[in-house]
Image 1 (tube, rainbow, N blue to C red):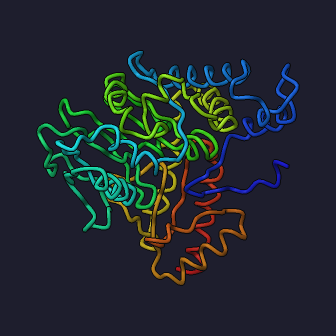
Image 2: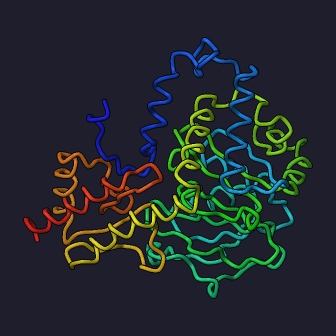
Image 3: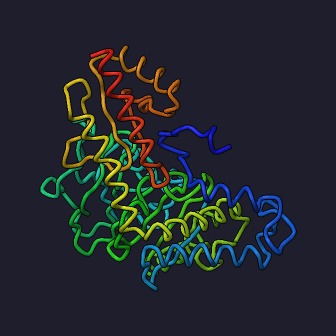
Length: 365
């Protein structure tokens, strides 16, 4: 029942729009006019081909994907993309540049180094990733195979507000935790990948938006790459070379339509900014709460903060769960508090957290 739902601040899987969940619930036993569940239909059926085409069309429309880009549906999450990207685009004679702005970027670097030569163009690791590296700090390779960034750092609570200047070098972006949370100029990226479980739908599918020239590069590696690790195979088979995550693709399509119904990415971005602003204002209001990210680089999606002691943080988390505010514990690697405010997270949930914070400070400050 709707009244039983709590506010889920988890970094993912995250809250989905209630209207989408209700549509899934209504049609789960049998899709209208089909007579069977979306969990049962063949991925070779006309029904699923239509679902797949509609989901791709909704993604293209929502973010104005140019015609020279393919939209692919891949499994394995962003973690598999950490390997697929260099396997497809990092030749033995070349170097890939990685900008290290957070823990997930660091993991991507680790995987890329197993494939080829990596240049860490800049890193804020020594500062506990409290900020995004500035353009002035970048040491880029003139003929790099590509430059890789992570646009939003879920663990540390930082986010790019503008893309780094990389010239004509292909920019590869891990946008797993902020894709479709605000307007995006796809044409400025050569490849974008994102797990769906933050802003786009349930876990199980990764959306890859890739430019045609990179698909061609991938095609040249067919003989040497495992079939399911080759982007060209997905592109040539319309993501249907093997059984795709049927249910997850279906749900992503519903969420894309929901986002369009909210007014598109401009409206969604404004709403997400308003939610984040409310929470950051509560953090900055007194010295009891302390934000961990540099203000200029604060994330709309993942708000991270600390309190005067770890004991207070543990008490805060325990009492917040009892108050119907779940998932506020910071990542195990850094501790603290983290509130994730993805697309479907309601503004009244932020209001409830701000009110709880005020009362908790009154009793413990």
